[in-house]
Image 1: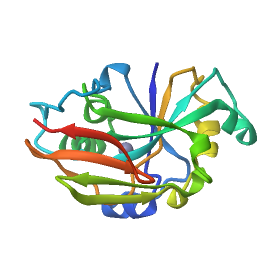
Image 2 (image 1 turned 90 degrees about the horizontal axis):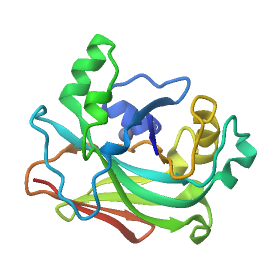
Image 3 (image 1 turned 30 degrees about the horizontal axis):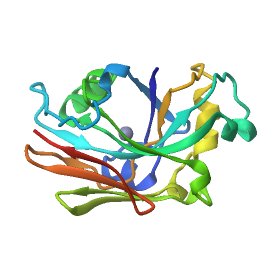
Image 4 (image 1 turned 60 degrees about the horizontal axis):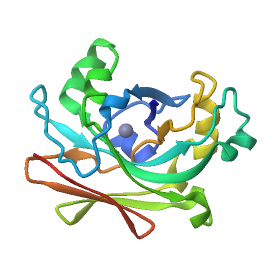
Length: 203
Ligand code: ZN
């Protein structure tokens, strides 16, 4: 399986990193080795001094699709989740400066936290999902899918123009504002519409 991630999908997050608003979705891939095994602590890698959390809504693809029409995109997924796109911000800054690919900053081992899944039928409107990230019990990120520049269905359609989607692939849909650094002994938990979706300890 593969993990397809969207960058710069919330205006307030684009502003906080002083990035340009893209005219098309920013897309990158994490390998399956990036998945943090369930119930495992996250160890800050030795090559970075500045790992940031980015809480994101996740979509699990349920069947093969290529060149998906946006109006049928909803038939390609049944489950919605919440996760973290851990980012080595210092490494990413160096790569960005040189115009190099971001993989070392985004695709390293453990960088993809994938929480529980909920059936999409549990939600009235996928374009109105409230979610948040708590660090040591304090809310640090608050988002709502209504603020996405590209909503879930257009994203599924868009990425399928470039990558054949396969059953089990996961789409990370971008992070809202409030990203920040983690330190050893921090713990992070994610909440989607009142459901705790993951809990991660930092080492
Ligand atoms: Zn992200």
